[in-house]
Image 1 (spheres, one colour):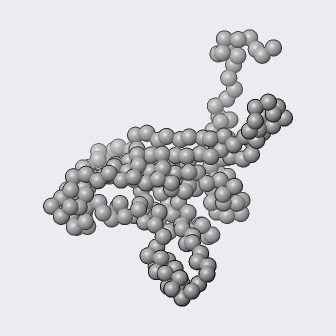
Image 2: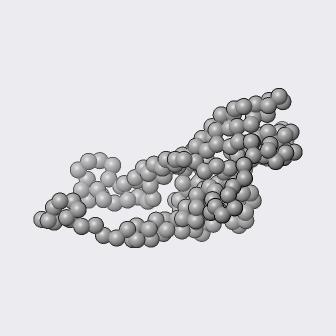
Image 3: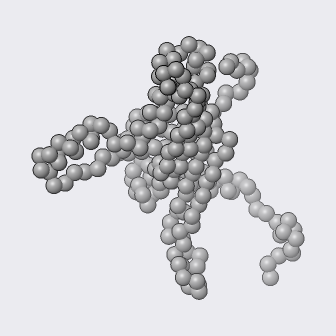
Length: 217
C-alpha cells in the first residue's frame, strides 16, 4: 500500500540486539506496525517490608521492577503486492523466526554442549545471549529481557505459510542492578532513567488551588 508522498515519516518501534560486552549492534528488528497500546507495570522495591517500620517506609532499594507488554501485528499483504520473492515462498516465517530466535540458544551452542556432555565435562556454561534493547522512539531506549513471546498465526497460503500474525511481547527492563554500571546495558538504563527525570522536570510544579486546598498545614 503506497503512502501519500507528503505524509510525515512514521517512526517504528522495535528491538535492537547488541553484544552485551562491546555494545556492537548485531541485529535490528523493526515492527511492521506500531502497537495501539503498550502496558507498563512498575513494582516498587521498598525497604520497609513490615508495616510500622517508620524508619524505612520511604527508602527505596533500587529501581522498580518495570515490565512492558506490547501487542503488534504483521501482515504480508504489502510484500505480496510488490511480488516479494521471499514472502511468496515463505510467508511471514522469516519475520517470526527473527523474533523467536532471540529466546533460543543457538544450535551451535546446543551442539557444543552436547559434545561436552558426551566427553564427560562436569561444567557446561549457559550461552550468553545478545542484549535486547526495546526502542520506542528516541525517548525510550531501554535494555530488556524478553519474558514472554506469544504468536497467533492467521491466513495461511496453500503451502501453509502464515500471511498474518499477532504478536504479544512481554519484557522486563534490566537495570544497573542486573547489568552493572560499567556495562553498555547499564549505561543505557541510566540514560533511560535520566530521560525520565528530565521529562518530569519539564512538567513543572502544580498548585494547591488545583487540589482545592489552601496548603498543607
